[in-house]
Image (cartoon, rainbow, N blue to C red; front, side, top):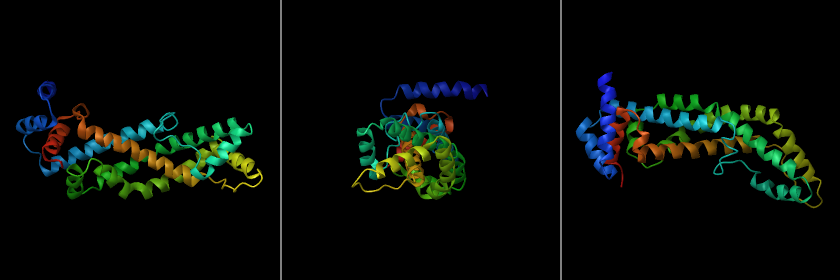
Length: 241
């Protein structure tokens, strides 16, 4: 154990003396050797568990969605004219309550994402792992989109429906839609918001996972274990240009 603890700082000292990822890759390969297929599988799975877990935790925290400009839920596109109209007739507070409650529902749903990703990671084959490691910068994110979207939707929707009711979003949005639909000569909007929030919550989750994937591919400091350093040093050496 003491040898391992002494060895890790040494690796960071070696990295600090390198100017580029390619130099780091060469140093890592010389130090560790090429990883075996099993090490690649375990290393990538470790990285993906860290990345997806971090994304789920961040988004499930208070303001995980509401405080993140990139993924904050707003009125659906077809209802943005309704929002503008409501604000113009003195119902800005109602519109604000709708937006806050949509984001709170998405934050509630994000708590259920982690086990879905863990299950998808466990089912990865050696071929999946290799293709992800040496694939495009978002190869893991695209893999998760293909393999988890249906399950995430099934998990998220009832949670979001319950949360929308709990935080008042169903009422707020229903009230907003009803108020807008009473305005003469407007195109009526659907007061049901659940499907929209479910999809936007999933979209936001993948935005964050893509950021975490890019971070570990490009950031040496994100490779926090010797196994991750060995596997991603191999990635740096063999990645697509």
